[in-house]
View: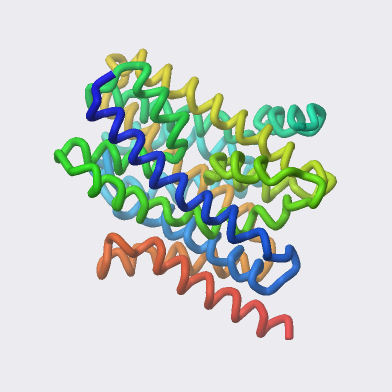
Length: 107
Length: 234
């Protein structure tokens, strides 16, 4: 293995594990029904939602090459399919991949 | 030790009809192909997936390596991006804490905190006795890491056959899957507001501060949602 790549992987895993470990340690004194727990639950959901929105609107990697309109069309259609398929996760997910590949060539 | 019954129950949770396994595999297929293009070998790619096990962090590492960033820069960039794992851990571990379980299980299994595993656990924890939730969680984590490794291997092995359109299809799959899971999980006022405010504030704050946008949107959106929810209850 290349030393540079191994160091990069180790640094990345350390930076990732740090947040997880701190979360596990500090959560020990928090009760399941407490207000603090509820607040952190809200923070977690809002943070994840922000991450998803950023990934779609300001993506990194190959999605940058897809237009805004194609990304929006695919996401909206996928959410629509999620609701009409009685909240099944698999159909909209597979649909989004196929739709993205197709729509990107036409929009 | 770990209860086999609940461990395997957790492991099998990814085999359900609405399992995240397909989405997760596809996302890591894209990551595997990206690693190969970056010059990683198969051992390094799998090593990275097992040790990091967080898609945004892996992407940031890959992008940072492309521009020749230092190790300190990589550490800080990944830490900022993955700081979301902190509130996720704090909002999950109290559901699994039990005095009969040793601490090492919690410290070891915090490595499995990632969006897919977190959302599966949040949806199913009420079905599991509190004493055994940590074993169930370790089962979920082992299963999602296994699937990620398989995806990375497939992506690395077949990267030459993936054209740009296919890579784009794989890249959009991850946010769409998570978005559907979040919308599905929004059953209370507080969670619904948290998701809605996060979705709105994330991109807006990104225009002002790209590095801090996710954390700030999470803190502001989550706090407003929490306060409005409490006000509504009272």
